[in-house]
Amino acid sequence: MPIYALGDLEPVIDSSAYIHPEAVVIGNVTIGSESSIWACAVLRGDDGVISVGNQSNIQDGAVIHTTPIYATTIGDNCTIGHLAHLEGCTIEDGALVGTASVVLHDARIQSGALVGANAVVTGGTVVPPGAMALGIPAKIREGLANQDEIRLGVESYVSRAKWFRQELRRID
Image (tube, rainbow, N blue to C red; front, side, top):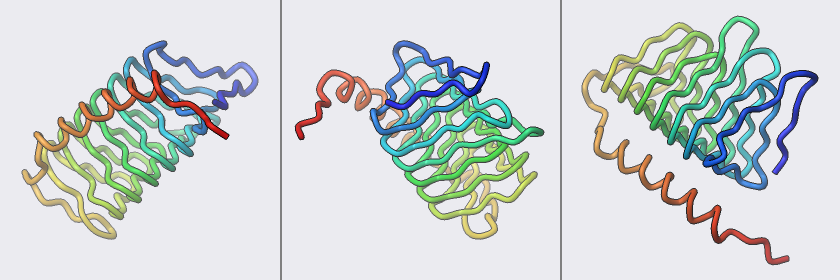
């Protein structure tokens, strides 16, 4: 798996985290316990800090970047869907960012909130706890995020990471 230092900036990855062999982690990145980074995901901490909490998953093809002004912070028990792009934003504990969505500078996805697939959360937007953000630009729909589905998805990826760590093998 390509894990790179950038000058003095070195990733800090908990020993229980799973990093897929084709994911890329660069620079000022911290990844917490039992979190997972999947194939073709890129976490590039060059301009600032990227922090991924415990038991969070960054799915295939996601791009996590940062800015010199805004860190990118992903809390505990979060799901970042396939092909999502996060840049200089905060994703609080238990939130879900859906497939191919974009969350931009200084946006905050609060605990238990959900960003729908293909949504664009523009800079400075706050998605309240338990709300859904849908569309381009995202519109907020209060209280509609299904907490049980978010939790089950996180549990699935914690389990899947353990399985992949034990049994993934290249056969070519």
